[in-house]
Length: 386
Length: 232
Image (cartoon, rainbow over all chains, first blue to last red; front, side, top):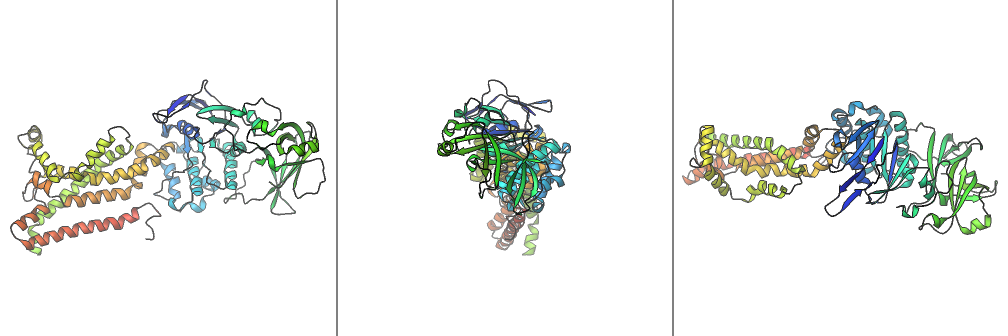
């Protein structure tokens, strides 16, 4: 899907929210993340895309077809808000069947109700009245309903915010599966960069209705706090303008599932794939009951987030420690933490390559000088089970 | 007592017929009006709302008087009515029907308006983004969702029309089988000191009103959104 946006929205007569774009933004993305603090116009932007704000002016290109200012029902996007507005006069089942029966687009749907119910883990809710649902359950049903309406682009406005973190991770992982298996496209709004980093292929950063940064995940944002594959170089920072205060520094590791730990059934073995130069390395993860639906997502690589302050560094290969993970890394850059962001604690950010994937560790200046870390060093990154 | 009620049967039948048709007309015209008004955000909204609520506070005799002057056979509207319909508007069933419709309008439209305003925005937006057209949304989602309020609206309108007096006296007069409703027949009985008939008629009216309201509260509980009314 491609977006071209140029519009001004009057929020009220006094306050005007303007998506003032000098040039039109056109990107090709299947899972686009939109990030910004509260009140920067994220939700408004999604509602504009969904055609729910009649005064807005925009155009949207999906599968080579142009849409301009299309009102809600015939718009190619379906909007799912965090408040999960369901039809509360009927049960969960009828919420789904009403959409299948009456939505003008539902015959185009490539996914059927049984599949959706299983993927969203809502079998046990089908006969429940809406008023008996928790807000997390409502969000599951609202998402399921959106999948069934036949529209191929789903706009998720903090749509999983009421779910606990493990269920949230499940649904975020589900997006990639739905993209691959049923060619859905998603636009996610979140104030959590971690959430976006796990699934999006592009990120837009929004500040006061303006796009301050458009980025492929492993591009410029990487310098600030996201790391993904193959980036360790120093991009020149414009980050002091970014609305990212309060976000922790973290990195994302793409891992392959290998199985349950034979020594401890509460742990799982995952693999950091080899990159030609380095052999695959093992990473241990806690065996969370992933989701009530307990459907394993079948794509083989899943993204995991690690906070930079959870990673320690050592030269010793055989240092006894309760930390279960020990990953061989090569230091690619070393920066003062506060050169990244004013709100980080004083310290040093060591950026490393682990089989080609970026990892970041936030360590104290003292550790840095004692260990005499240099760019190009081989070290071990140690951390607890993920 | 039964005999006296028998002689009043035309008045009772006329009252029920009047109330029934009034509610029917108000439902048919009131539904789209309330639905549009719930979505309307323009500057005339307070004025329209006031207009609909006006019969609540206006003495029925005022309303009746205006209708009487507007449609008297000497007036322009009155003459026009006679030319088009062939009979005069005042002192006819049509006259008291139009009066009743105006008089009971707030009782039917306001509960619908409240229900639509409460849910219209949200439910309609989510139906719309899910690809459900406006008409289907109204018929398959909004109406079933608000059925409790619709039943209330109809019942209140019905019960309220049963009790009209001043307006009908003004515009309809006291013509048996044409404009003489129960409340006016009752007034006649009291005037002519027929207290037994007055008692019978009052009791009949009391029972009809009480029964319709009891039915409303009984059945409307189960029409509330699932999960609220259950188990109480």
